[in-house]
Length: 335
Image 1 (cartoon, rainbow, N blue to C red):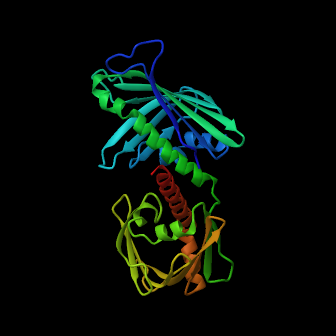
Image 2: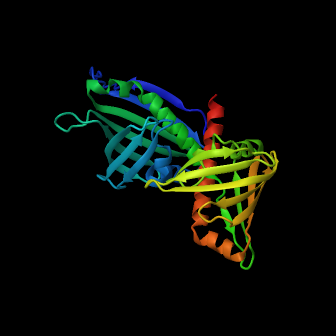
Image 3: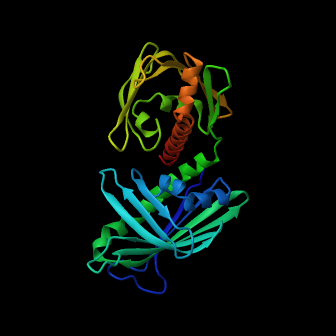
C-alpha cells in the first residue's frame, strides 16, 4: 500500500514559462510498501508499465521500451471513448534501481516536431524496505494547442500513480498455484489476495465486475446472465480480437456469502463436458485465501482442460482479479 502523495506544481526557477507552458514543472512523491527493485521493475518492464501507465479508464494496447540510454519509448494510450493517443520518447539515463530520466512526447506540428515534450526524472529511494518514489516533470516544449494537456497534467499523473500503487500491491501478493495430481479428475487452484474476504466474495460474484477480470487480457468478456444465488445460472461470452466468440455457462448450486461458491462450468464449444467447481474463501488475518476445486467427469476431460492452456488463463485471470481488488481498495482509501 502507498502513503498519500505529496504534490507540488511550480515554474522553472531559472526561466519564466512561455505562453505555451514550457518551463512548467510538476513534482509528485509517494511511498510504496514494497522494495525499490520491485517498484523499478514496474516502470521498466513493458508488461507491468502497460497495466498502470495513463490516467484512470485508459488502457495501453501498445507499450514498447528499449531500455538503454537513447532507447526509444512508444506507448499507445486508448481513452474510454476509444480514441488512441500516441506517446513517444527516449531514455536519457538509467541507474537501476535508483533513477530513470526519459523524455515523453505527444502530438506533431506541420514540421513533424512534437507539440508537447517533457523531461521526466524518477528517483527511487530506499526507506527501510519501503520505496520513496519522486517524479519530476519539466515541460521542454508546449505548443498552444496543448494547453488542455498541460492543464490536466497533474491530474493525469496522479491517476497514473494511483494505478501504479494498485499494481505494485498485486506484484507483492502471493502467486497463483495450480495443482493437478496424476490420476485424479480434479484441478485445485489457490491464491491469497491482499483484501478482506467480504470484498473478495462480493467482487467475485458481482456481474458488473466480471468484464474487468474474467479471462485472459486479450479477450473481451460480456455477461449474458449472472444470477449468483443457489439455483441461479450464469453465462459469459468472450470475444477475441479477430471476432471469434467463446461462450461458457453453468448453474449455481450453493452461494453462501462470504464463504462458499459452488457452480458448474461448461464450455459451449464442447457441450456435455461439465465440471463442478467449489470455491472457498478463507479469512487469514485480513487477507483472503481462495481455493477453487474443479472436479471433471473423467481424467481425459481434466487433462484436456490442462492441455488447452487453462493454467496460463487461470493465472492471468487471478492476476487481473488481484489488480481489480487493489484498485477498488485504493479508490476507497481516497474517497
